[in-house]
Amino acid sequence: IGGHGDAVKEDRENFFAASPRLPVAASSSVFSALESIHQPMMALEKLIGSTGVGVGSNNWVISGKRTTTGKPILANDPHLGVQIPSIWYEVALHCAPRSAECPYNVAGFSFAGMIGIIVGHSDRIAWGVTNVGADVMDLYIEKINPKNPNQYEVNGKWVDMKLVKETIQVAGSQPIVQTVRYTRHGPILSDVSPNLQQLQPSQPLDLPQNYAVALQWTALAPSKLGYAIPQINRAQNWQEFRNAAKNYDVPAQNLVYADIDGNIGYQMPGKFPIRAKGDGRYPVPGWTDEYEWQGYIDFEELPKSFNPTEGFIASANNLVSREYPYLITADWVYGYRAKQIVEMISQQTQPISLKNVQQIQGDNHNLNAETLVPLLQAIAVDTPRLQAAQKLLQNWNLQLEMTSPTAALFEVFWKHLLADTFHDQLPKRYFPDGGDRWYSVVANLLKQPNSSWWDNRNTPKVENRDQILRESLTKAVDELERIQGKDPKNWNWGKLHTVTFRHSTLGKSGVPLIEALFNRGVFATAGNGETVNANRWMANKSFEVNEIPSLRMIVDLGNLDNSLAIHTPGQSGHAFHRHYQDMVNYWRQVEYHPMLWQTTNVAANTTETLKLMP
Image (cartoon, rainbow, N blue to C red; front, side):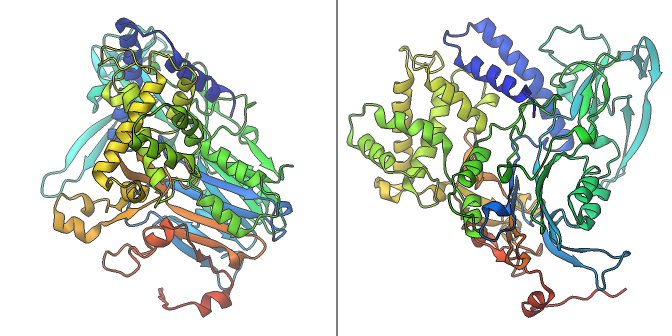
């Protein structure tokens, strides 16, 4: 959306492309600027939970002109943190009889306590979601009256804050009563966050002697999302779907659409602020109207598409339009998953089947390896161990498959390459996590074999690109021989790249017996965070998977009973129930179960019935 993401991307890549070694003073100013962004974000995450950075999803829809059925096929796999019980509950809502008072005839996935189906299909339409990752949180520096801490300045006048008493119930103790101070922008976060009490602005700004930091965030305003989901569930066509999407305000999503009449579409709904000045990236003065939100982008001006000539639509948290006039965010993902999805669809010369779509959802092709493997094969090595490693790479299909020795070699190499290149020049909290941004940074550096970023400052000699590549490959072989044996045939990516489903409360108790009762794992997985089968691991932490495709859904608009789905780890939230973890193996092998639709098919496959009587 717009060119903003490209501009930020270019700035970041140019920074890492700088050939001369940065002087200490310049390095210090760079990291001071990074710190001014990092500290408030860390403070926010401690207060309100994850801000969603790094969490993605895939969805796409293919026109019947390109499918074997002659009708659209829609696919969706939202990526969320690993957890047990599943965040999703697979459910169908069928009104019997169907009427104006009870119009629902839908199936798909919902959250516990949520009204309606969040992703799924009705008898007429299907839809899926991915996260936009919009920048809808701004920090404002408020000038506080030195004579009255509950007043702040607005355009030269002292204004009273809104004071709200919040009572926090504490088990076995007296309730805690805390007064939350609100300005016109929102709650003051610096009251509870030391990180926001000592700002280090990266841009010239005279901080007031007495100040506080307030958060303006679309999620703190009333939301209409609760109306949007039932409206989508009732929608019968594209126009009704878009009318419902108008209320899908927070969080902003990329919605893909298909219907039984053969139409496909895309709509980005959400509340996106229009700022008078700035892009929301840094804390800004709140005592004037200079940086105020002017309102939100009108729904009719938000990105959309209906029956495009390409015959398909795909989104994976990437930049979806380069000509958009408004700022949605400056931090789009770099589009590796989207590129692979688009290529796998567009390169099909035969009509696309449900089986083809399953293969796309389970694809583990590593686009990072496309860049690095040729260089690894070209460097000179003089030991049998490294020559054997090069031979493994020579015949590799670039798929990060569970049992692949070469996938293990490459991903362990990638971890060491990032450490060998950047750990000597970056503070620990900025060590590379290995995600899409680092794909781009390294791809840019590879074109500059003598860049100072390759040099290890901890050694007296000056290293270049090929020396670091050789050193990192050597370390990868050393590590794999140590943990998986001397024979490369025994190396295995899945044994390193595992997922453990930890119960969000009892599973983190620190009591081994309780954790053993509620947690499930360890399970081998394929892929990484930038493959379509997105099982993310962090190069600055461990190979353990921390984000996954939380569900996979494929809807056949030609025959809804052919639709497929899976989520994980199981449908039940009861630790001793047989359905607590029985989907894990299907999920990690990218297998599915039928999304049964017709009443006769559902009845024929029913094993238990629970009736709730009023």
